[in-house]
Image (cartoon, rainbow, N blue to C red; front, top):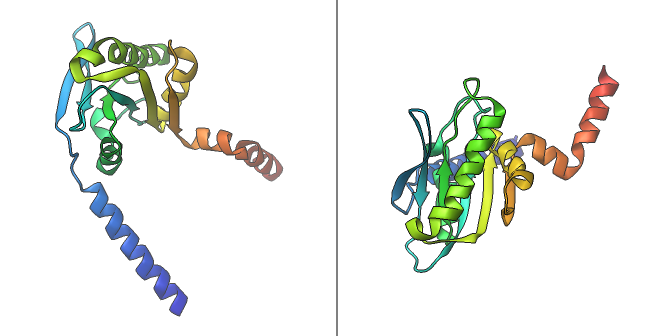
Length: 184
């Protein structure tokens, strides 16, 4: 009973800490740009730049949402703040969503965003186009993995935050398949 109470109290403190971080606002003003137009659809990117001099490394952030919902504003405030405090320019992008847009069009949008950042980023928001990392959550993590073989030149780093990527990276995907096969 005593251990259970300690766990509950610890969990409470952890939740308060997490909600405090999630409620923080970004420490950098946001600039919004249209990086691509398809017909009358303008596809936008939000750019956050730390208050530092010189060309900065950049994080291209791809939102999640099963490819059918979500938007560039979905980046967590605590995550954004950590990246900015580390000195990165953060560019959070939109892409056209399914089912209206097929996967090839979605991947093309993300590739076009990457090329736009490389081409326009140095003059618009002082980035170093040779130092781009791609980060995505969920479906954005999947699109991050696509960036690893689709984008030219290759990004310097890929950080896919997805269940599938985690399972593949840790080698547990085969174990889970084996377990589920044994349960059938």
